Length: 414
Image 1 (cartoon, one colour):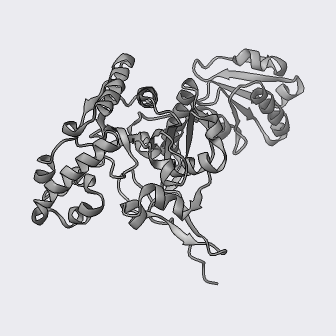
Image 2: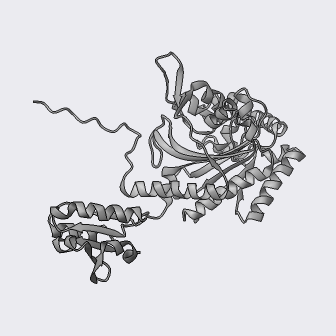
Image 3: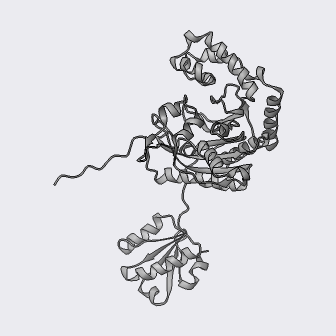
């Protein structure tokens, strides 16, 4: 009889286990802890949306839409896309679920996202993000709130060393239109020297040329006019309010006037927390203000600002994460004591004591399991202990051992 071949894991996906899973969990736990301090509500979203949600919000000309989205036609003939990011789905929910009545809304979510891109260090085709958004707040303090939130998260994860907040303004619509026209004129004058990708972007997304990594583009991009010469007084005042708020909150930042967002609905603040500890792909958390996004989805003019970060990439930066070891490992000396051990185990867990049971192998192997697990105590149950409703409680750190009534076990280990 021939054996059936086991299918391989799909390229660009991952099975998260062991230390990687502990790092992953540490990022999520810190995110949940900090978002509660900042009074952000948790929202759950569908993993897939109508393709139009992402095509409109991300722009038909972006690489994500044209090359990276997992889109397919379902049995009803509708075009469906696995979410490549969260913001578009949140904006769609804001409109279709009537959440306008709750604005301004401070929302977070996290979970898997999908992009068909070349897998590389810390980047997968199915990966995971944490995401934070404020919708319906046009004030610069909303930008400050999100940036301080992100900064505290990075500090609580213990990864702040070597991580820098880079900040820029994209101005208001008037600023952006004037700057875009100047950039197009500059790049047109050097069209013959630009890379093929940048020539393609020139007519559709010229701001993206500024962050091109192609060495042919860098001298031209570096010589391009900056945005500061085109800032309206309102746009300048908005950016100054953001930077003053960050200074007041003690958040360090660096101006990067080449930091851009290519889509027209982005306004004012753009930012990235970057590091050189993950190779060429240096951003670990990025976002910006998108005051024109909900309009692009057919809704009324609505302010918005948000950020997202890859859980796997943040996890790669955290120190080795360990689950707390069990406080007690219950060790029945033989199979005759298994049911009593199960009752003791349930009592410990019900009282909030982390506990495990060594139920396999001979007694020596069971006791070794307790030691290997890193437990504080082994609660040993043999025939004598079972008969007297007690356990032999061994302190695995000191080696001391004493008999404790089962009714007093929780108090003894606490």
